[in-house]
Every structure is written in structure tokens, then in C-alpha cells.
Image (cartoon, rainbow, N blue to C red; front, side, top):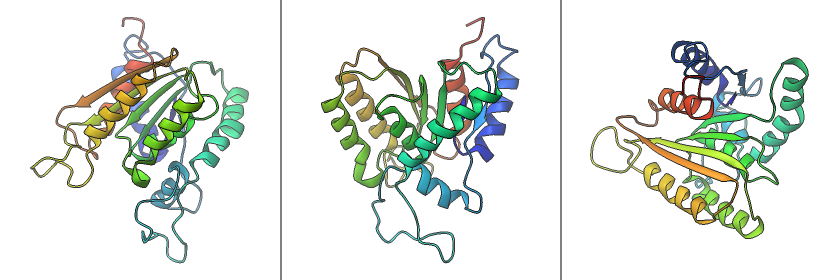
Length: 233
């Protein structure tokens, strides 16, 4: 089980599994790996660079690290780091079944997940993609999906897309004002389903009464139960 934004998601995932897993009865046991930020970088700077697939919509976006220009678009390089360094490290030091790998990401982290899903071969067996920032880079992941569909006959993976109910554009204080993640998720799911990839399974959830900042724990809980059902499920 690999989670992005490790300072937040690692302890949260561990706590959810301990509390809700019932010693493997409702969530299967797993080895948890946190994908953290680069040493010396702020979380914002690091995740902007390592999780995104290209340049941002706004060319004038500012860095939160004085004296350093903002960086974006190095998701492919970070994916290679995971494949070439993280996977071998886990294989060497832990009794891990590397044929049942699950990835959990949120927001920009879900863009990293899609980068790895759309690579030459899917790097994980299961992808839990919470609140994917499909609006990023003028919706470049929609264009990437079209290009992949034109060149590949199959993607072998299970994908769970999930967003909060309030991540849509509607009147109300908790709803989004600019980007409709609910609409985008549904459109992206429909695009993937329309390709009829034999090895791809896609599920999607809209989680009631959650927004972009509160939906994370619910995504992780649903993702764990979806990817690793326990002995009683």
C-alpha cells in the first residue's frame, strides 16, 4: 500500500487500518509505504513538481520557497524513482507481494497515479484516486487519455475514483467556486469505460457531505476496503 503526501496520509492510513480493519477481518493486512516530500522542500513545492504531469494553467504562479522558481511537470521522473528505487527497496527489505500493489493519492497525488496508470505498463494493480485534479494544465489528462486509447489495446488495473459531494460548483459555502471535480470525475470515468479495455475495472464514488479538504479520510477508508477486503468481506 503506497500513499502520497506521507506526513498526512501515512499516519492516517495506519490509524484507519488499525481502527476499522478488525485485525484483517474487514480490511486485509498490508505493508504501508509513504511517499514523502523531497528533503529541503516545502510540501507545496515538492508536490507541485513531483505529482503533476506538465505546466500549470497559470504561467505566473508563484513559488512558496523564496529564491526558487516554481517547478511543475516532473511526475514521470517521480514515477521512475518509484519503479527503480522504491520498489526494489521494498522488495529487498519486506515480505511484500509486489503483484498486489495499491496506490492511494489525493488531488495532485491522483495526477501522479494517472501518470503511472498511463505509462507503458500500469505500475500498480489497484489505484485509489481521490479528488483527482483533472482540471490541471487545461485538462491535459483528458488529452493524455485520448492519446493512450489511440495507442494501447488494454490497461490491466483496477481503479477507484472518488470525490466529495461538495467538490462541485453549486451555491453554498462548502461547494467549489471554480473547478467542478464531480463533473470531471464522471466524464473521466465515462471516457475510460468507453474504451472497453479488457483488463481495466473502473469504479467511482461521490462521497456525501465532504469537500476537498475533508474527503481524504473517507477516500482512504473506502479505498482500503475496496482494494483489500478482509476475511469477512
